[in-house]
Each structure stands twice: as structure tokens, then as C-alpha cells.
Image (cartoon, rainbow, N blue to C red; front, side, top):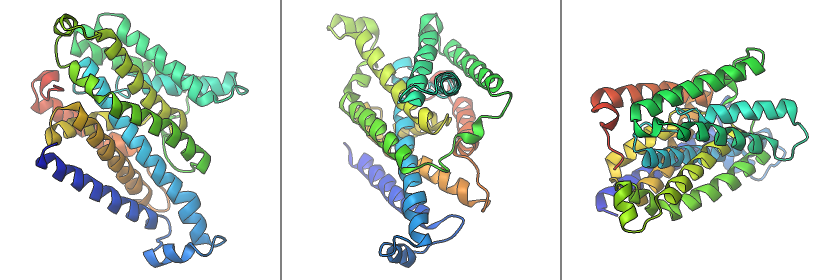
Length: 322
């Protein structure tokens, strides 16, 4: 890792620490550092409940979700060789959300229902994406993905009698049980992603070149796709669909730390964690006592980023994933 990359790693770590401290104190009620420390010795106090039962689970959930979504986006971009390929824009998160809702209505007795049904939805969307000729054309891939996303969002609204579904994609009200689930699923997936990060570098070469040197291209491609889907779907199963994290962060990471996925993935994990926590903290403090959902905040942040990315670049290849 270069000195330049080390500086960026250090910078994002500082941002994470500062934002965690701010998120602990900020909210409907401001709790200063002295009050936080004082609450440690008073488990029955309101400050203790606010910090340790409400804010800390929310902070941990934001961090793990942001890291998971950013790494999922980086993996999808490596496989599809497309800088805006991401589970949220390709319909995978929407499909997971739809199947999760269907499971709640039809299979309320199923253990681990939300995650199981969200995973089924992700697999269905991934199968549709990879079954036709969309892979051969980056424009067609994105158009098919957007159509999938719109289809599953529409189906979800029909299933829920037209109710808006984006509002529940928030960290408000998450319990320690939800946070523990996210931590187990997220840490497992992120650990695997860091181990197999070199595989993403193989996909910078053409399939024929990889086959000539005996690299199992299909195994690598499907392993990365399934891992990226798993990370995105695990977030959707607990929190809901949150857009654009997987587009914004990996593209910035490639600008700052280079194109080696052994560097891009860990940086994306840290930067994604920070972005999600920052977005959630801003969303819950900007219009106190109300709040703006994490999904809405990321739509406001990520939408203009994608527009600028495509306007400044050369088509879908303006910022190379290689």
C-alpha cells in the first residue's frame, strides 16, 4: 500500500471516530461527553437508555450496513466491469424487499423469515440479470436493472395496498437483536470479501486470457456476485433497501487509493461505514424531533453523484473499474 493510500485510510478512520462521537451525543436530546460518562454508572437513568439502548445499536448498525453495501457495490462493478453496477440500482435490493414483504404475509411461521425470503428475492433478481444478453452491453445491463427495480417496487406497493415502502429503510427503532443479526451477517461477509479480494483483480483481464492461464472465470465471477448479493440482501433483510452507497464509495475509492481491489475493498468498507453513519446522523438531527430516513438521505446524496459521474465520464466507462 502506498503512502498516499495510507493517508486516505488514516483520514477516513479519523472521520469514522469523530462521527461516532458526534452520533453518540446528537439527537432529539443533546447528551454531552460528561453526561455520557456519567450515564455509565447509572443504568436506570434516561441518558443511559438513550445512549446504550438507542444510539449505540443505531451507530453499529449504520457502520456495518454502510460497509456491506459499499463492498457489495465494488464486487458488482468488478464482475460487470461497469462503474455504476450496484445491487440497489440493478433491482436486487428491491427484489429482496418485495420477497421479504411476501414472506411476512404468507410465511409468518418461518424461522429467520426476513433473511431467507430476502435471499430468495436476491437470487431471483440475479438470475434474471444474468440469464439474457444484458451482460454483453453495459447500457442494456443498467436498463434491465432499472426496469427490474421499478417492477419489484411496484409489486411491493401493490402487495402493501399502495403504501409507500421507502420510509421504513431507516435505522430508527433497531434493537440490539437487529444489530446483533447485522453484525454477524455483515462481519462474516466482509471477512470473506477481504480474503477473496484478489479474485476481483483477475477480472480486469479478458475471459480468454484467464482461461489460457487456467483461472476458473465462472467460479470467480459467480463467487463475487453471490457474495455481493449476500451483503446487500443481509442489509435489506433487516433495514430495508438503501440506494447508491455501492456506487458512490467504490468510485471514490478508486480515485483515492487506486484500482487494486485488495486496497479498494477495505477502503470501501471503512468509507461506506462512515458515509452511512454520517447520512443517518444528519437525517435524525436536521429536523429534530422528526427525522429523514437513511434511504432518503442516500438518494439525495447519491443521485447527483451518479449524474455527475456519467456526465463527466465517457459513457459507462468514464471511470474505469480496472
